[in-house]
Length: 406
Image (cartoon, rainbow, N blue to C red; front, side, top):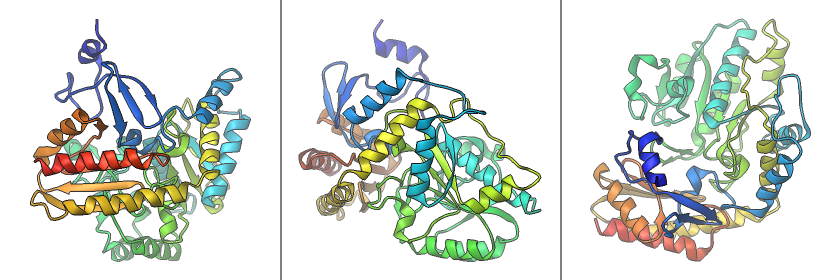
């Protein structure tokens, strides 16, 4: 039986039906920026596997790290035990973020869940029984329950779950300061996506709201949580989205690019004030423990990915990508079908006025050698940092032709 036939019978894909109502492509292998399908078709990847493959595919340093570790210790429980790859990774994350207390998780959504629980425990340790959060309109923070509760219930894929979702407080970016002032005594924390809001609309903001949030959260002792899962490790042109505002949050979540897209892993990092407050209270512990927490394979490849990034001229590469996106996408702005063009760092976005054209654009791009995955009205690309100019121009020209043909 062919792979696609098996897949159609048994495999439920993300954000999809079973069997899928949209085309599923069978991938044979990957290399650098190229996805090779079972039928021999080669596609340039314009998505870097949902923001994660920041070094492209099959990078020798990352493959070596995971192969070497697999012969030593592929997994060991993290409860009551530790190991060099995980401890080293925590040290690297602490150095990169300025947040010395690190909790390793197995996915981005889990890291956000842990961050929310940590903020609640911090408040409990200080005698405050608070569980509501302020989040932003158009926010997206993941697909598990706590995460869904801080995703905009009106403008997200989670509105279907209705009363099941935790109830929180939502603010526009522009009104965030006033919202914090209004609810300062009722909230366990404030959670934001720094600079770029991802799946909630690929919106790009001025850093001013981050400065306001930092100032007020410090004033009122409210944990500020920065969800850097999509923005972190250089996607916006700086290491962290928060760096655009020159602030450090109390809690940071990271994932996606952490392992260079090789294996699932995420992390939450907090200030020493938060970890000490919880640890020295009657609560004493953080009540969370994934089975695969601190997995040695994931930890080893994350260490290699961070080293690879820091030892490269990634800022120069991302700036080059940003300038090419800015210049080449601009001539789509005046098309009747286009609502907006925007870009930052390794991210380029074409927002259409209608949601009905996404599949047409995707089909055209695939037929012409480019893999994209639009959602709703958004045709966007987040590329690996080592993409060649030729490959990037191919992605952009194909997207432009697809949009102009609508």
